[in-house]
Every structure is written in structure tokens, then in C-alpha cells.
Image 1 (cartoon, one colour):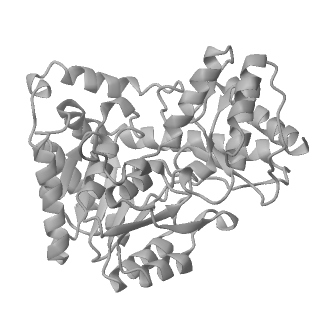
Image 2 (cartoon, one colour):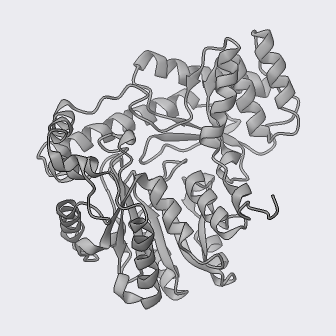
Length: 431
């Protein structure tokens, strides 16, 4: 090309959760029976939304307006419904104008970081969820700035690390947190998030909080940003993909909190709506379903049932790895992920697993030289067992390990997955 047409941040667009699929597909083509444990799609893993939710969605198909464009910001009745729910929490009060819909939270994440000045950075957690870290890094053109989550303290944020990075890097304009967290499943207590809000207030930053799993918290205790952020400008991200669950709906929204507290923040939020206007609107039918589903008296029981389900599966995972002294595990407090971290010094570049499929073994042996130690384990695990997990270093993390899901609906297969992972860890470390 006569000019370089590649965005300077294009090389930062990485998504290990999906990229590992290419390796799994290659092994499948070589005859390996693949079990996908890399992606958080409840429907693909056998969960069926309740009949009453599917009936509501089905009936909406017969409404002519569900086939039409909606307002750029979203269906007015749905935005009014959601604003009322925020206000019922008796924290930060919002209006329907503070609710803005997107085609899934991936679209929201892209817009939220894409409309920031390149010099305005957002500090996020490590391990980092790839959608956020890659979008922020690609927008700025630089490596994503992170604060540490502590595996020896339930993957809670290292507040001292966070505070110092905000204090001594004046390019940081925002702080990102995910609670429940992906990939760790950690749920942050009120005192901790209020301390993060105080840091943001002290250093004049705004907050982004990803609440896609806010209604999958074991034992209750759900907490939304509007309840703890105080007077700090913030953006809370929500969606229906994990709750109904309906990931294929691509329906997410943001709740803009304390917009009027800062004129610069308010202009930035205006730019999000302006960017959305270029697309006309987000998907209409899923938005129309929200008041009908979330306002239904059966919805609270639906949420409680799913929380109890994933709580039990988290206990199963903890039991499967009990007594394994080469790893660190923490029972998640929400979402449906489980992170296994190898202790320092456990992994090396000589360990292997037996791979009976000769073609698969040869391909894995070609791929492992020079890769991160946990990715090496993940590759051998795929070749030997067909189980596809995501290496922890793929979440912009210095710790070595992997993330699995708690989504497998077949009880026997889920037990096999946990048992096989434990046996594979023991065999790999011994080798």
C-alpha cells in the first residue's frame, strides 16, 4: 500500500478464549475427540432457557415492531424499566437517558474504549478479561495497564498496587473492575469496591464496572455499581446473555452513573450515543423482551436456581482438585468459571503428556517450543484428552494456569472433565 493502513493498536487485538479454538479444530480434524471448555456459552453446553422465557420471546416475533429499528439509545419502554430498577436500589439515581443499548457487551466495550482519547488510559485487573484488555490496548496503541489480583487472597484486587498505579501514572483516567470476575469468579465485598471508588474520587478518575454476571452470585449478595460508587462518574455494563441465558441475542446495555458530576465525562458519554447513531440502533426484539422477562414474578426464582446450580458445580470442582499441592484454587463466588493456578516453579519446558494419536502428537510437539509454560500444558492437555481450556497467561497475567467453565450440563461428563484435568495435572507434573 502507498500508506500504512493498519491501526497502531491492531497488534493488541488478541482473544485467547477464541484463538485456542483454531488449535482445537486442528486436533479434531486429526481425529481427537474435542471437549470445548474455553467459552462461556451456557446454551452450547446444554442449558436450555426456561419454557416461559422462550414463550415470551416467541410471542414477540409476532409483534410487527420487533422487526423494526428502535431508537438509537434503545427501546424507550425498556430503558424506562431498567432506569426504574436502578433507582429502586436506592443508590445513584438515573433517568432513561442514562441507559444506552448495544449489540452485546462486546459492542459496548468497543465503543467505550474506542471513544476515549488515546492518551486517556483505563487501568484494569490482571488476570484480565481479553475483551476489555485488548480493546483498551488497541484503542490506545499501547499495552494495557493492569493492577494485580491476588491468588492467595481469593483473587481480590491488590488495593495498594491499584492505588500506587493510579497515583503515579496520570495518564490513567479510569479504573475497570469485574465483579463477579472473569476468569477467576471472584466477587468483591462492598468495603473493597467502596475503597476503589474512593481512589477514583481522590484522583479524579471514572469507573467502568462489568456486571454481566451480577445476577450469578452464589448465596445472594448481589451488588451493583449504583449502590457503592457514590458520587464518582461511572459506567456499569449489563446484558442478558448470561442471565436468560441468551448469548446469541447480542443484547447489552450500559448504565451511566453520575453523568452530571463532571462536564468532561458527560461529553464523553454524549460521544458514545453519537457513535451509536452511525449504526442506527441495536437489536430490537431482545430489548423488548427485558421488561416482560425481568418483570415476570418467576424471574427471581430463575436467578436463584441458577446461582445454586453453579454453586454446587463450584463445590464439585474444588473437591476434584483437593489435595493437589502443585496448584492454587479458589472457590468462585459468582459467574461460572474456575481458575487453576500452578505454583511457582512447578512447570518447565520438558514436561509432557502421553498422546496416543500420532498425528496429534507430532503437531503438538511442533507447536510447544517457545510458548509460555501454561500454554505448553494446555496444548498437551488438548492432544492427550481433547479438553480445550484457556491458559491463564492468555488473560494478560504473569501467573501460569488455566480457566475452565462450570457449564457442562451432563453430570457424568462434567465429572469426567474434572477428574481428567486432575489426573492430567498429576501426570504432567510428574513427567
